[in-house]
Image (cartoon, rainbow, N blue to C red):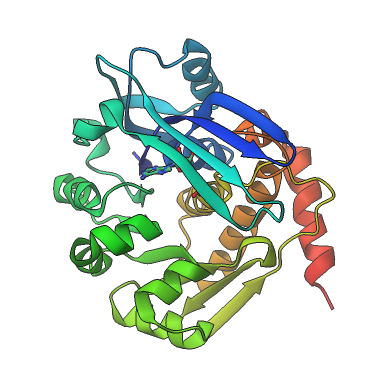
Length: 299
Ligand code: AMP
């Protein structure tokens, strides 16, 4: 048992300047698991309703995602709607319908309890604590969160940070948690709160990796086509931990590669609606994108 991913599984309705789609596959876990599947077999924990399309279950199967921890409950699947401003940087949440997600209590199947890598994708910090309470192994734990939980579940999030190895958040969330606009000072404060590794995502401007006194920066790729940024952050962290679970190497040099592969998958994510940009990619697609990052960063 290597990697387990716990997060939301949703049907999203999205409006961007490129168009709109409704009831398409979404949720933190869907993006994370598909991205991780290019490197290892992700074991997903989540809940869907009776209306969850069979075609998406097939899509997960096609990506070799283990679904033993995916339960189907009577009722409707979690739904989320968002609208992006013209510059894609600002997003308004149109609606959040919890449905079966309201009573979600993530339960790890016995075989999941010995995981080596755990991705706590974006869900309530109380549920993330509950996942860690069930683990029987010394796993490498990566934590993702969002502004909602920083505001509404602050104390639980702060205590959770003491239990994880890596925190992956965006620049706005780093500012909210630390009050620091300076990335170095923010990262130091975040490390002081618990995680040994901190990644600060800067949207289209790339990401920063902090560990001890080391810093690594990966650029944002210049893309001709941006259609839908939904799930880019989830895709980034999914590929990152997928790569780690495959390589099992926690050196700073290998973490750099994990951040680059996170960025590679995230760059595909934004090129289409929903998970369409990251499904059924070939190894050659990933290699070509990886080379583009090398060309852009080398001097
Ligand atoms: P991101 O673009 O990385 O912020 O992730 C977007 C995804 O998060 C969408 O597919 C939503 O279904 C999902 N999402 C939105 N709100 C929540 C929430 N409160 N809890 C868990 N997942 C959410």
